[in-house]
Length: 381
Ligand SMILES: [Zn+2]
Ligand SMILES: [Zn+2]
Image 1 (cartoon, helix red, strand yellow):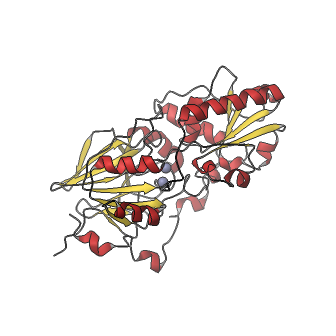
Image 2 (cartoon, protein in one colour):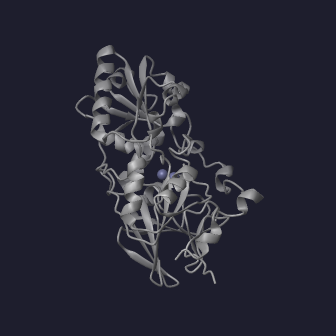
Image 3 (cartoon, helix red, strand yellow):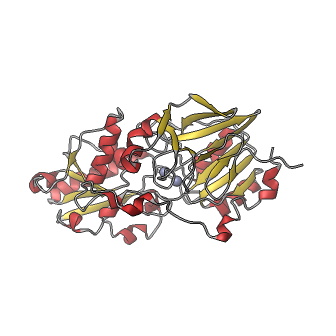
């Protein structure tokens, strides 16, 4: 007889039947555990949320007045006898891997993660488990990150050069995660850092949460243009090609993303400079992280799931692709910022109606869950 796996993928998300809760559900549910505040993992509409303490203010900024309980790394809570704890994922501030233990069986849901210690969020911690549910956004051997120190040096050099040439420095990165990482990597002795409203709102939320960030100045219509020319403007992908960005002309425009490793990515964004800096693990990072869990079974949620699960099978893992709706940050270069909530100057405007409806409805074929090799999965442990 096949027993039900401890976690399964259903129409709503990653479900734990024994504990009756979901992890990063994409449809509204009663009890949601959230790995981190990126919009593909933290959706609106759940009755109850559980997240890491450092996700609190950003979740409230993005989702409004939600019913939220928080927990620190290493703390444990119990749902119907199922033990739940959070462990650092090293992805962004407040990102957590979720460890689930029930009757001696242990599963870990990675959420998004990176293994390089960025010095801003708590470093990734490998957690031993039987089954590991992992992302693999950059699960191809071609992805091999250079050290962040090297990238920061390139960034600061570029800023200094723009200053000499009398150009404004405009740097694009995701508002939650990448923007703060860039901010901490910049040489603040070169000049001031000015922020687009979406990024400044996120910074403010993190500061309310007790996070220490380098000083930033919000760009407003009154901000002095000449002063800004000497500084660096940090803005989200949604501002590329907008009148908001054009008003900084003449400028040099840099784009910071793991996708900059791909040829053609820079051109697609029409950026003058591409900086390869990712908040996801590269190929070696993914493999080292998976090995460190000492797991037998791996489920891959987003990224290069097909080829990566094939590779893991070849090296002896019981590996499966899972069907999920994750992949909203670097996974597909879509803007993860709540752009609908702000105007061109980044000021918060009234929350529109459509924001309160669940995002995507699954088609029938998508409904046929999740695990492509489900029969194997049933008796995995
Ligand atoms: Zn993410
Ligand atoms: Zn993700």
